[in-house]
Amino acid sequence: MERLIAVVSEYHLDFDDAYQYVAAERNEVPLISFDTAFDRTELGRLTPQEAILRQVGQE
Image (cartoon, rainbow, N blue to C red; front, side):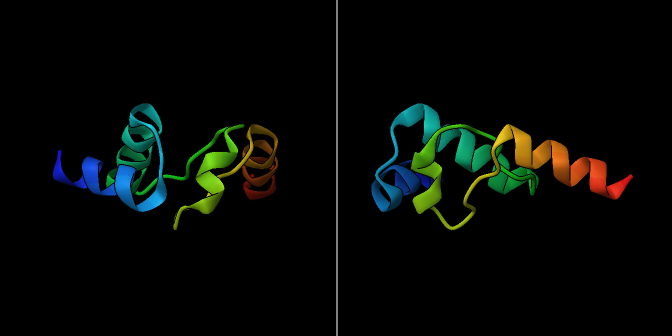
């Protein structure tokens, strides 16, 4: 919970965005979202299209 509160404060995310951020961070997976709020975070984000193109390029 402490990390969640820190992310809300540090990146000015609302609770549900901060929750997703911490989940992605802890599981070492990219954030896939249309939400541009993640662009101001350390992890950043991939759009769904970018994620698909990245996956297709790895096959």
